[in-house]
Amino acid sequence: MGQNFQQRTNGSNGRYTACHSPCRAEQRDRDAAVGVGTSTLKETAAECVKHAIGLGYRLVDAAQGYDNEAEVWYGIKESGIGRSEVFIISKVSPDAVRSGKVRESLDRTIEAFGGTYVDLMLIHWSVARKVKERWRIMEKYVDVGKIRAIGVSNFNPHHVDELLAYARIKPVVNQIKIHPYMEHQEVVGNTFAKGIQVQ
Image (cartoon, rainbow, N blue to C red; front, top):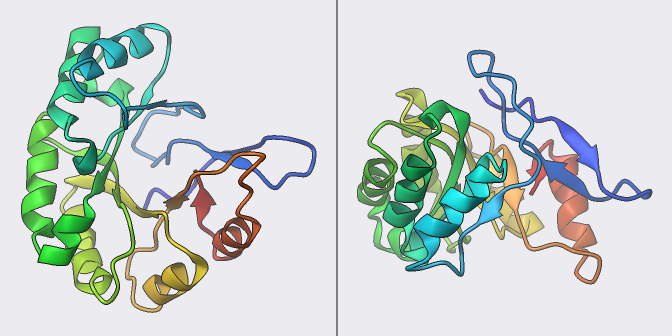
């Protein structure tokens, strides 16, 4: 499911790879290497997302912790493009993982984005001894089509290894902060070695 990511290397050393949209056979062929992030957008989220889509962006990255999913969805709707034309990423908040309210939080996110599905859902941060049961819930949402693919964000190598020991559905991506001054070579190397993309 959704693991045939396309890749582009960024730089001659080949260490940095942009994560493209996971393309399933039944999805249209898309090439969304660059997306718009919304972590700092609150009341301007709808306007900014609409503008970004107008400029050609087709990947929108949101999160429960940003408290703007409804605004992001409004911007997508106002852009005039169809739901299938935009790739939506969101993230389960650490609070939901800690409290065991992942199912409720997933339902809220799906509802916020039109009530149909989310393309890629991530666990935002690893929470010690809390991920396994929560991952199982996310796998069930993939099974019924409410989430198209699942992954993680800000996971260190040992977090990824622990997850892979019990995951029925492998995470397709580990989303981390990375740039030339913050290489995270160990995280990147371990993630790629496990067959998971870095975003």
